[in-house]
Image 1 (cartoon, rainbow, N blue to C red):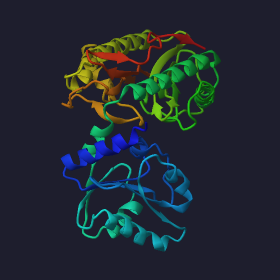
Image 2: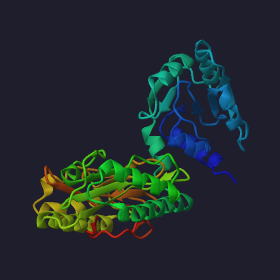
Image 3: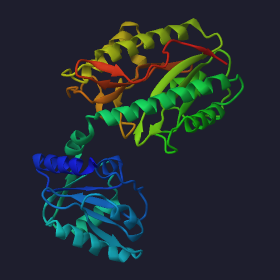
Image 4: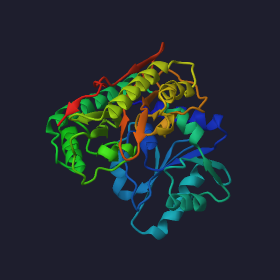
Length: 370
């Protein structure tokens, strides 16, 4: 039996609890989570409007009708043709059917575009369009067993793909060439083509940039070689990082790898139900600060994962949100020495009834490649 009517009903309850009369959603992981349907952002708007006690309304182009016609639960469909001048009236008809004139409509701040905002404003005169972030976060933040199983599979695909890529590392090949090889292996091992993000493959001084892009720099002996990559499986993702040595590396770089490995272990051990997210960040950060490299750990310890690469909850030192069973997140401490190199070790975890479990088990100790 489809989970989607249950999820739509849960959203309706959350909207009521947050004093929202409706939610209007663009194509996004949230829309897919609620409906099982996949749409992409394009010049033709697609908007799902959910209002408590009423049948959901789908505003979409006529060419997308086959997707909604096969849904195993009722929705009220408002299709439109190819003439943009007619779209505002279709929005007005849909929003009027839900009695949303002058009401409060919640949206996803990171997904809504000006295109849809203006159509919603026209479609519901006098409406207050506000952030529904609190309600939508609570909707997806705890993963069920099926979701966790899909994430576990995404982790295995990513780990197997990297292990297949490592023998291909050769001194003289570029970061971009190696990133291309990793993408090929991710696809061969079962990742969906739309991956959570483009893999980061960076070596030497470039590894000191936490969000480096693969470049034409050739990999050299003595480099640290960092991979930050992930796979997608049935809409759920993995996000991992490992750092390797290309031949013999400077003892200082070996030392920071050992420090980050210890910080990663501390962060993984810290997560338990009922504790604030901040404890995960503090546990990992304390190791690095005690080692004298606190100034070189320049980002939070982790972020939530699921259908998106970055979602709630966030492992920040000031985050009081309590961890609960089913919450999934990364632990990814790092030390970055400008001009020399950087180390990050990242794992994917899930909070259990009694503690936490790492979904990833790829070796964390430093390994020599190339």
